[in-house]
Length: 302
Ligand SMILES: Cc1ncc(COP(=O)(O)O)c(C=O)c1O
Picture 1 (spheres, rainbow, N blue to C red):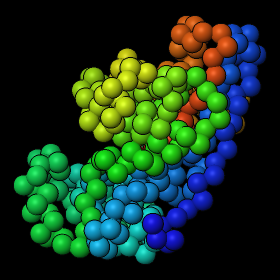
Picture 2 (cartoon, protein in one colour; picture 1 turned 135 degrees about the vertical axis):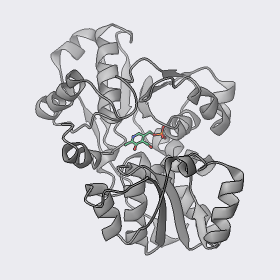
Picture 3 (tube, rainbow, N blue to C red; picture 1 turned 180 degrees about the vertical axis):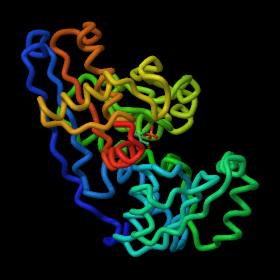
């Protein structure tokens, strides 16, 4: 990989100190991947890393991806473009684009070129014919799927799993399944890997995870929890947002309610319900996404 596509990947693992956890015999640690880089953090970097290498292998000089107007992925790709001096494009779900939205303002400042499409066209984002046309329009572009999830997203997340201290359970939020697939791929078979689905009716993601990870196909040491979506993608109850604020105040753990907060809220409830046996060592991955808080504030949702 080019030296120019490297960032320092060292992040801390924070222990959550709480008497009730001690009394249950549970050790809970958070891998603070949100601190990986101020702009390209969490699973965004883990999934981009080998995609950037692949882009170079294919002699492409531009990055083209897809996302909604508040997307963490678009935000990270724009920042990577700025940092590594790459032209970046985003096909953004419209039909209109609010130019004052903080995510859009940021990506534009980074120089990202935005191509706003209506919802019908956006639905074609994984269609091979549509992608072929897009490639013809942008011949220098390496096309990265929405959320940055593809085959090359897996090894970066596998490396993350391999870098962790000893644990019995590894937990992450799940949107498209790339992060979960990578964590399964990088884990020992003795580790139970748990994805907390952040969207409704997410069972289909199990198949996506199996497609991305050979181990997910052949091993049973993982599961996707589909009952903690809290209303669906981007939705959350006041109780969940309250929980995020309490975690920030009581445990110095900043969370947002779309991914990391949803996962932690689920995990907290599961520990309370004695889902994990005494003596369990649990690591939860903070996958970043804190930039999303600005968008939620902007829309008056928090
Ligand atoms: C902050 C954050 N955490 C978790 C996820 C979910 O990861 P994945 O799509 O790999 O399941 C995303 C979306 O990619 C995200 O932006």
